[in-house]
Length: 145
Image 1 (cartoon, rainbow, N blue to C red):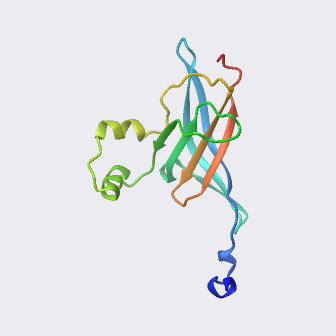
Image 2 (image 1 turned 60 degrees about the horizontal axis):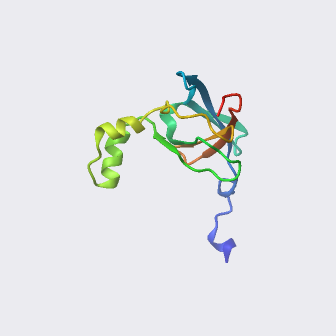
């Protein structure tokens, strides 16, 4: 039954996306809080064998687990980026008014400062407008917890 429903084309193949976000992690302040800046994302395209580089305009959203345990990703920070008036698109999609000040704190390529993780690791997940999702962990253990 599956053979009859699926097209037999090369484009119909299922594959896993491989990629890596372009991230800059900095420390600031007396307490050495961390901030994360997303600068883009690179995704491997298995159909062409090429790496597609995307700017922050092509990123739909990105998330940070600020205390990654190595087993499960827990969204502790969520941010939205991209071009083409995402605020207006979100309002239309939700059919609701959204507090513009709250939105502006989430529409960012730089995270809000957060305390160094107890685990010594953070994880960053980036999703582009094509639905490609990449996750990378970062060891920030040199920062006191």
